[in-house]
Image (cartoon, rainbow, N blue to C red; front, side):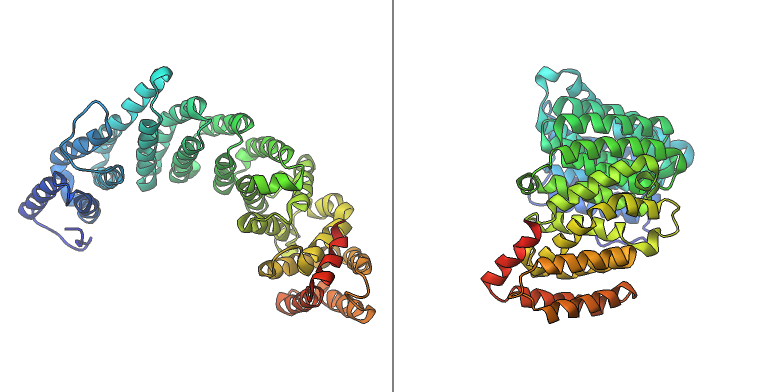
Length: 452
């Protein structure tokens, strides 16, 4: 059954027999998981032809949802992940129904998910976290498979308060917060530019409040999705800037010392993912006069955390620097030059020293390409300023590590890199510098003077 494809046009008798076979298999403990997968695949392949069997499908669907209900004693032998397969299949069929039938059918699909969730939230004293997590995952599955923006918007509008209430009651649970954010992420992706402004404003207002209370990184990731989806919409820019400002203030306040970065790598990773997406999708947020403080906080935070002992978080920080210095992307922006002057130039020497410290031993060799690209971008954007910073940084390295001739050679290559977009040649130069400075423990230790 699961091998059927959309090209097949089964007759009514075949489909009836197929559904009967799947129904029987769902009651068999050894076959139930395979039957749930087959149900989803059949619904996907034959959704149009299955519309007339909707009554039978809903009966089977409701029985599958009863599996996770503590009040029932289900005969179906399904696991939680099997139930998600059944939900996914039903969404395919509902979306294939005539337009005038879809809304009522979608309500039938959602009712056995939303009603028990609302009931759980109505009595906090008896709230069962495991049950709530299952229901949140089911809502997410619906959102993930919606291809109709109108339906997605209606569902998001009707569930957003439920999700926020869940976060209010169970927000201390990381898993719960992640489930709520996951549901909202897929809901926002499904509704896209049809999302009502009032709903967006409510989201943008509530996220910083929840983050201030719980500090869950998933709220930063959700916000990065908001920036990605709505960053180019002028009407959302004010809300986005307010959202980002609140999140950056809260985040960087938790990352004052180097050890705090290593203690919260997920927070660092998602903070700089958010920052990179701002630069890609909504640079006005940080380049405008009102956004420069946000950019300054992020830049200084990145400097403090450049040597974090976590690969993804470190790459996120370096990626943020790379995007900020990507002159080709931002040079046409009217506020870009001023942003560089106000944010980068005052910290340029410290930034250059840290990049060279990373190249000479403070970061693993695996990051050399990223460090070299950031340094070349800095040279191209800041020109003579950057050349001076490189000279001053190299001068701090003892002569027994780098000879005057080696330093001069690097200066020549840096000047050449400032005038070209070719990163490969300069990457080799940075590799050579790294090899020289890492040749033994004494030379590596001597290069730490760059960050002392």
